Length: 235
Image (cartoon, rainbow, N blue to C red):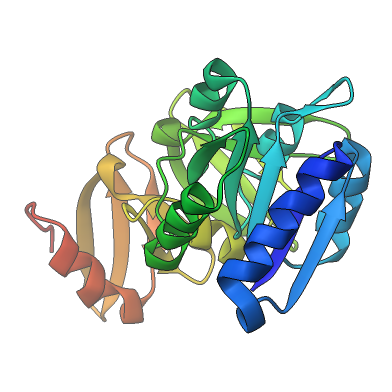
């Protein structure tokens, strides 16, 4: 397990590290401590992790900025904070658990239990869409579909807007809820916005959204999507 602790208080960070090593032992393959927001941002950009322990108050910086940036990441986040109100707000970004300070071994053990049994579907409400020089929050429920685009993706929203995101289709599929399905090597679609599946002569398939948009569907994805959905088919 690859762990990153983001905590500006040395005593708290070392205490958490000690507890984690006691509980996990040899299951830890790497453990890193970062004290600053910018340091943690750089580390995450350059290294893969499985679990992030994040203090929301970092010497004047707000950990929410890191939460926004990593809401589309494939790792899970556990908040460590003395501020319960902030921690509750953090759950909107899909965090796995909140461990109040002072941190105790029993509570960390419980949080790690959630990590071990998590199926990858936390209750994320927003997707942090990172562009060249900005970060926007897009409500998950408002995403119609996602299209691959030159090693990035285009995120199409219910309001008609499209935003380019510096993530791959594969990385988004790992973090989006289970009602998002891959229908083509270039498309992920929100099943809640599907109107029907159209089958044409010659064996071609298309997904029609409630907006009227039609997306090409790969033959290999047809049976799986059909089994998940319950509406009438057009042929």
